[in-house]
Amino acid sequence: MNPITFLTWNLAMLHRSDAAPAQWQQEDTEAAFRTVMLDVDPDVILLQELPGLVPFVETHGMVRANPRSHSGNLATLVRHDLLASQPSTLVVPGCAILTTFHESLSIANVHLAPGVGGTGDRLHQLATIVEASPSACLLIAGDTNTRVDELAALAEAGLHGAPPPRPTWDSKKNRFNAGGPRFTAYFTRWFASPGVEVSDVRVLDSALSVDGHRFHLSDHYPLTGTVRIV
Image (cartoon, rainbow, N blue to C red):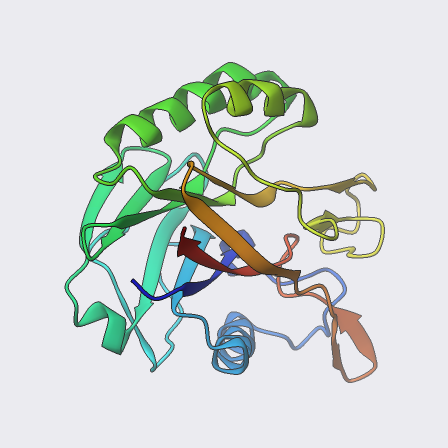
C-alpha cells in the first residue's frame, strides 16, 4: 500500500490560551485548527482531548468512534478518498482508536494514562493496543505521556520509535497555562511495530500572532510524519 501521512494533536479541550487576546473564542480555535489542517493536508488526523465535539475539516471524515480517555475524547479523521476504502475501526476503551487500512496497516490514535506514577498503566494500555491490533503492522501515535525510563520496556515489547526532532511540549516558551510549571517533554510521539517505517517527522511549534499576541492553539504541539510498510 502507499505511504500514509499523519498528524497527531492533543487539542487541550479547545480551551483558550492564557496568552491569547481577550476576545479569542472557541470558534476562533476551531477556525485556526482548520487552516492548519488544510495547509498540512495529512491523510489521517489523530486528535486527543476533545470536549465532546470534533472540529470540522471539509477534506476529511471521522471514523465511527469517539471514545473518552482519562481527559476528553479521541477522534480520528481520514481524507475522504482514503475513507472510501472503508477502513475498519476498533476501540480500546479509555485510551485508543485503531483504524486499519486495506487490512495491512493499523494506526492507533492514543491518549495514554498521565503522570509520573502512570508507568504501569501506560505499559498495560500499550500491550492491550498491540494485542488488539487487527494487523501485525502497527503505528501508535498520539499523546503517549511516556517517560524516558519506559522506553526500554517498549523496545523489549518490539516497539521502536525515535524521539521527535523537537519537544512536543514546551511550557517554557508556550505559556498556554500561565501559572503552570516550565519544562519540555516528548509526550506526543510515535511508536511502531517491526516492518513499519516512519519518516519526515516534524513538530509544528510556530506560534500564532493575533493583535499583538503570540500564542498557541494548545499546550501540546502537533506532530506530523509519513508511515509506510517496509
